[in-house]
Image 1 (cartoon, rainbow, N blue to C red):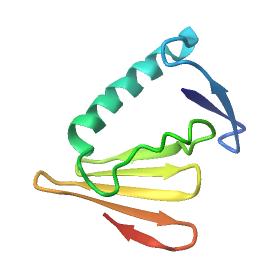
Image 2: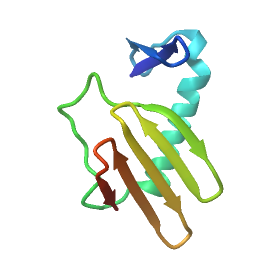
Image 3: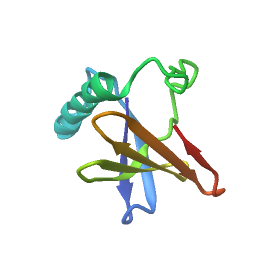
Image 4: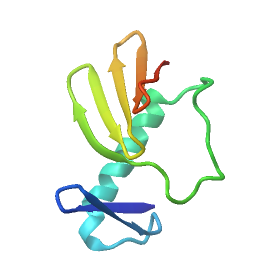
Length: 108
């Protein structure tokens, strides 16, 4: 697990690697939330879709969420590689829109 902290109001990010079961006490609450969010994603968001896969080759320097915003039916994630993910949640379906800095748009 990589823990990324920001310095200088988010202009600089510092990445530290920890084992998922061995981590400093000061990030215990964040690890708890991470596990809870992982359970939520596996229960509600993950499914047998073409876009759901596991990349076992990438284990370090992975992209991460820089900022997020949650509303009733929408979650917006700003990712570290300049991708903006907008997830629209409805009871009957779920739609994701991915925007990147090249102004490419992909709907899922």
